[in-house]
Structure formats: C-alpha cells, structure tokens
Image (tube, rainbow, N blue to C red; front, side, top):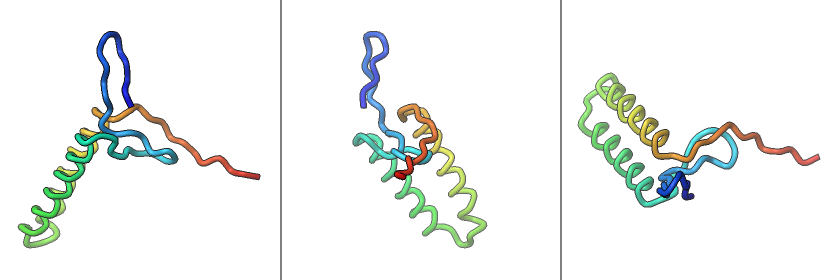
Length: 85
C-alpha cells in the first residue's frame, strides 16, 4: 500500500492483518526485517547457555520488532470477523 501525504508517497513495509490485531510483511523491506529478527533469535538461542540467558535477548529483539512494525506499518484498528447468519 502507498500512502500519499502532500507531495511525498510513503510505502508501508507492513500491512495490518485482515482480522485481529497485528501486521504482516508487505514489501521486501518488511520481509528483510522479519528474516533479520528470526536470524537474530536463532543466533541468540544457539549462543545462550540457559533460558534465563536467552529470555532478555528475546524480549529486547521482540520489542525492537514491534517498534519497527509500528513505525513502518500501515495504521490499523482491531477488526472482528463478521458472522454469517
């Protein structure tokens, strides 16, 4: 998706989920962020001796991912699936 603000066009890296809350990659930049996140998690896990050593790294990396998706993602709101009656 492209957002036009004034004379500049902004391409969102992440689009909101169709139903529920969250984002999914929409561009190659978004996919790159996800791959870097997963690679960093795997690297941290392999080089951690205990779960208490891995947990802070997991929380920090996940917080960074959430910040990136929030800043580069399309604005969203909670969406409920419509019931068919």
